Amino acid sequence: MRLIESVSDWLDQRLQLGTSIRATMAHPVPRETASWFYVFGSAALTVFVLQIVTGILLALVYVPSAARPGAACRS
Image (tube, rainbow, N blue to C red; front, side):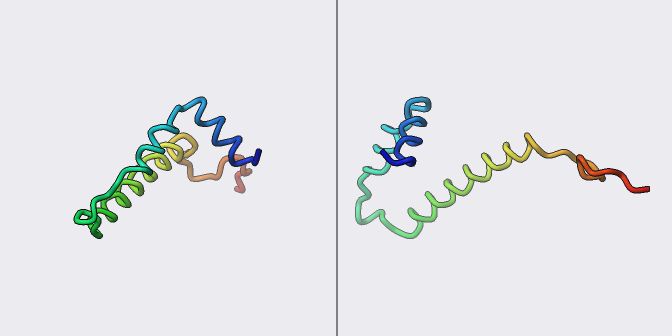
């Protein structure tokens, strides 16, 4: 079993998102609604979720300081 498959199985066991992702990927898109607006809407949602996740991760590690953490002050 490849590393990616084992990591995917591990995440699926814990988060149980596999069925939801498979259902979303198999969602049929009617030809009359398959327009650029449909594509850009889903792309905008994906980028927005990515921005939320990275913002939360940044908030966990960001330290507002004039001096860098761990660096000796030179005076």
